Amino acid sequence: MSLKKLIYAPKRSDTSLLARFYFADEDLHKVASELDSFDGKKDPERCNQLIHKLRRCQDKVIVIIQNLIEEVVENPVNRDYRRKFPEDIIHEGLAGQLWFGAECLSAGSCIMNKEVESATMRPLARALTKHLDAVRALLRQQALKANVISKSVRDALALFDRLFAEFELSYVSAMVAVKTVSEYDSLLDVAVLMSESTQRAIKIGLLSQEMLDDYEPRIMFAIPRLAIIGGLLHYPKGPLNPEEPAQMISMFKPYVPLLCKLKKLLKNLTDKDLWLLEETLCDTNPSHKIEETFCTSEKGDCKTLLTNSLTSCMDVKAVENENNTICEKQKAKDQKSDRSDLHKIFVYVSGIADQLQSNHATDMRFVLQSVFKIHSDNNEEDDPFLSDEEEIPIGNNVREAPRWVPDDQVQECTSCKSEFTFFKRRHHCRNCGHIFCSACSSHSIPLHHYGFNKPVRVCNYCFSFQLMQNRPRLNDSLNRTSVGSSTTFD
Image (tube, rainbow, N blue to C red):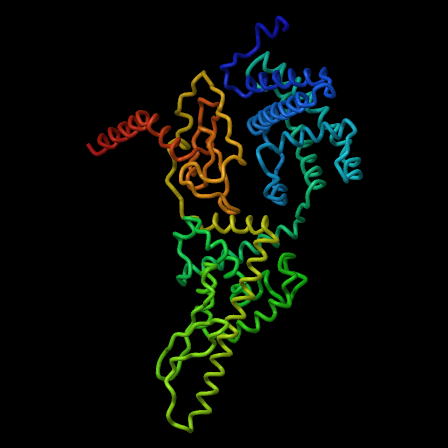
């Protein structure tokens, strides 16, 4: 180690971004040097361990650089293009994977079965890796001089931000199918349709706000079904118009003939039949194979069951007048036809909606997340941890954050023990590292003892624990407010 490093190197306890970058880059340099001098053929297992360690170090370095860009670059590159990416592509380790991919491409490697795309991206990958090395060198020198970002470093970070965004879009587009602007707009139209259908369902009592707030599983299936009815009947000029299949989103195009038939059947329903249909569509219990409806007569109402074996109303009183026999037979025939149409519509709508959930899972997850976000009623008051972040004293001793429990080792929420499903996703608590569902990890607070100066996700238990630790500070704040208020009234 040089004398300059010994004298001017930052301390491990320093929580500034430059200091954190300095030590993260040092660790990366050590792993890279060991990997360069290592013969992978002699010990392949050790080689794989070093590669994984290198990837982790790269993730850490690139995240700190991105934090520096957010802090010091005046106009960072807009990342709105990420909305076109599949949901599972956007994760915390994406930046590190892109860096690793850029190095592989610049070294001459090719993406499997993507030789043309690899050759096209190689000049950009080389420019990115070359500039990244220059940025790392500048940041190391800056960390030894002063804890202030100079203009030259700021300009270098801005250029890196532009190159990295350009490479990210090119690389991800080559690896996976990325939506076009028109496809993304069409998906937003579907989200609006489902949102409008949800709002209407809440207004007429088919769904409740509590169901949305609790993320009940049955409404995940009810909302797409109601949206199909709404798109054909209540919003005919929307994205579900079968009369204009060219303008329809691709996920609905295979069902155009069926949607045309559904639209004709729906127009023949009475308001009461439509209500019964929508109510039945909201009931997704697979054990119930019988759908209930009502048939009416001049004398009153009678309840009937729609099953494959029972298809007529058994409780209607016989008409004694022989002159009305033909009329009553015609009524029974019409009622039977109406019930048959209701059953057809139920089967068609349920089939289309359920196939959308299976065949277009990512798109449907995005749409449903948008609906829940729009109709969320959990607008809590400002969190004192978020509003008074600058008042929290930042200690000098930063500990290493706990290791995250691997996703594949946990199949249920650590707190409520509910099983993780397609819709109930896993979330890590940054304070303890365990895995929880969204309901059990709905809070965000800064964890300065782990170096998280911005609010991060924590579980409910860790949130309560941190709240109790900061209770004296909050009480002092309340006392000062009370004193000020009493003085004003005097």
